[in-house]
Structure formats: structure tokens, C-alpha cells
Amino acid sequence: MGFPHPTLDLPGAWPAVLSELDRLQVADEHSLALSALLMSDDRASHDSDDAMLAHICATAWVLSPDGAYAIFVRHKTLGWSTPGGHVEIGENTHQAALRELEEETGLTRFDIRLVGDGPAVVHATDTNNPRAHRHWNVGWLMTADMDAPLSPIEGARWFACDQLPTGPPDLAATLPILRTLLERDES
Image (cartoon, rainbow, N blue to C red; front, side):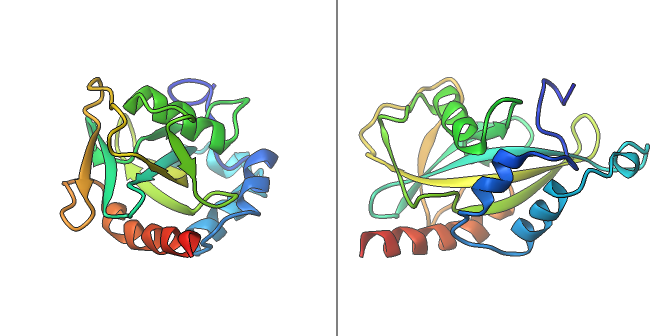
């Protein structure tokens, strides 16, 4: 049983996620580390008391069509963050990103346009709730019309990309990469 529900824990063999990473648009040290964990099943070192828990998560990076704005949701421990969460057993990261997007913003697959034919980036978020663990986030880039209604439940809002809210440090580092992918997609 994963944390807090049946999630994809690491290390572990999750071939659907590894297959999605084969189509990753921007590879870096995070994606290489995640791929290595996906090819390892060294449960003994992972199960020790001092090993950091790790989970595969999916994020939905939703930008306006011109790339000037992004949707973030209010997260109780992270501040403003991308819509996303744990990938559940039986899902791939694309399915999880769409599920989390709908749960947290009200937007569905009919409201967004996927940019590229695979995930855009891998980014990591470390948390201490309830104990230290890492979220290996497989991020999918999407665009949406800014007039599409957002659910108020999670506090989803559009923010100008040059005036980011307080949130995880990977927001500011990841957005320029995604905006470049969006520009490349438009040309």
C-alpha cells in the first residue's frame, strides 16, 4: 500500500511510466535519476528506516495559449503549485495528470490542448508531511483558454508567468523551459 493510497512507490518497476519517459521532451538530471529508479527494484535499501520515501506524481502545467499565464492551485503545504498529485496503481502519468487537473481546477481533457506527444519535464519536490519524502513529478504541458471556468474548490487561479506566487522552487525554474516548448510547438 502506497502513501496515502495505492501509489507508485520507488524504487520499483513501473513500465508504463518508463515508456512515457521515452517520449520526454526535455531530459535532464531529474529524468535520468527517475529512469534509474524505475529500472531498479532494490526494495531492501528503500525499506530501511532512514531511506527517503519516494512516489511518482504527475503534474499538469497549464499555460495560456500565448504562454504569458499559468494556472496554479493553493496547496496546504507547498503554497501555490501546479495541479498534480500521486499516480495511482493502474494509471500512467498522463491519466493521473488529467485526473488531478480535473479534481483541482475543474478543467477536463476537453478544455485543454496537450503540447507535444509525451511529458514535457521531470521535476522533483521534497516534502516532510508526514515524513520526509520526494515526489518525482512527470510534468505534462497543456494550454487552455483563460475564459474556461475554474473550480473554486482548490483555489485555482491564473498567474502571470513574470509574477509568480509563492510556491515550490521548481516553478520559476520550470516555466521558462515550458514556455520555450510552447513557442517551438507554435512554429
